Image: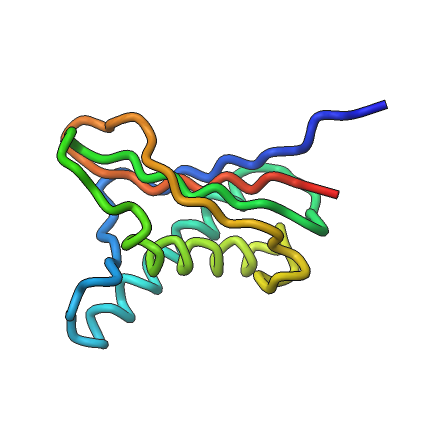
Length: 125
C-alpha cells in the first residue's frame, strides 16, 4: 500500500528582495535580506497546519518576472534563508543531510511584474 507523500508548498510574497550568490552587497544589507526571507518563510509555513516531517526533499522554485534567461542556482542564498525559516517553524527539525535528503532548484512559470520564491517540502521515507 503506497500513500502519496505530504507536500507543503510555501509561497513567499512576490517581489521579496532576493540574495544572489554573485552579489557583492554589503554584509549588513545581505543580513537584512536574509532575516526578511527567513521571517517570511516562517510565516508562510505557520499559516498552514502541518505536522512535523522527519525526512524530506526540498524543491526550490523561482517564478521569474519575465522570460529572460536566469541562473536559478545563484539564488541559493535566498533559498537557504527560506529553508532556515522552515526549520524555525518546526516543520523539520534541522536542514542537515539526515533530514533533508535532496534539494533541487527549478524555474517555475513566470509571475508578471514581480519575481517569487516558492519552496516545496516533500515528505519522504
